[in-house]
Image 1 (tube, rainbow, N blue to C red):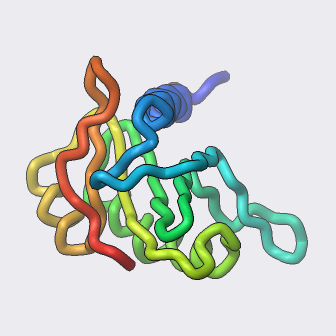
Image 2 (image 1 turned 135 degrees about the horizontal axis):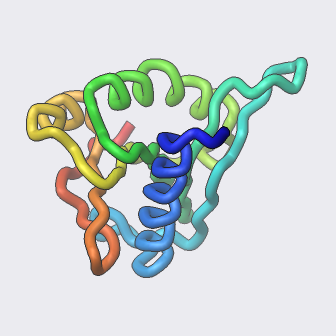
Length: 139
């Protein structure tokens, strides 16, 4: 039996990734490299978390978490649970200013303020690629 939620989420991730490939730009910052689906393991090779998309250049890195529907729980999980592990384990972030984004196909209006309060930018899919609707703070 397949999990429809996982499949829809994967489609959202591919769409955001493909949109980012088109421009390689967030907040008017061009990124030379884009990485997708990076797994972080513990000493027993058990998955701790995954980074959906990471973009990097000489000075900046952007971490993008993708959900089909962005909600408060997804924002809080990204900032409180996933981000500390990614920051600890990801060598691509060393010496870089880090921007955070959460992307998806939809977001509730009340969640836009939650993302802003947490310094997380919001990316939404559209027919032409990516719409960046809220800027990220530098972390």
